[in-house]
Image (cartoon, rainbow, N blue to C red):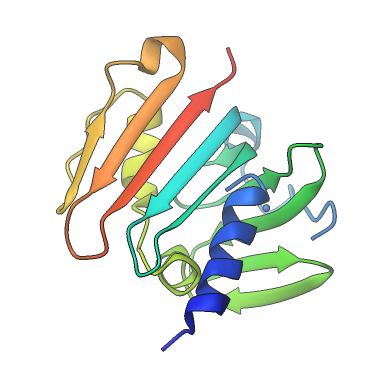
Length: 167
């Protein structure tokens, strides 16, 4: 079991690094060209109603799709705090010059956040598809103005994800 302090640190790092240490990038040669061109920028806020409640926000840059991509989280000053990259069978969390490997984005987000974020659904939601996933409900009504909200009610803990995307 992950300690509260470690989970809080990992959550803050994951969120504050923009959904990612130092200017690490996924190898663009391994990512198909069309995936490398899909980029979303904006702000991310995540709240996990654990004990204690964990919440954080960050600037974000998200590339790729549910199968292969990269998420960077930035501080308010624009410093890259965290980089998460993924491809089939592997996910990597880079922070403070160190990298930690996971076998999937699901295991990375579960360990870091205490909540599994639905990457397949997230990319569907960004495309305007109200994909259904057990326990999650997305509000796409503001997507036209760059706003996306999703809430996980089960399993516990409750989690809320909000994105405000740049035009």
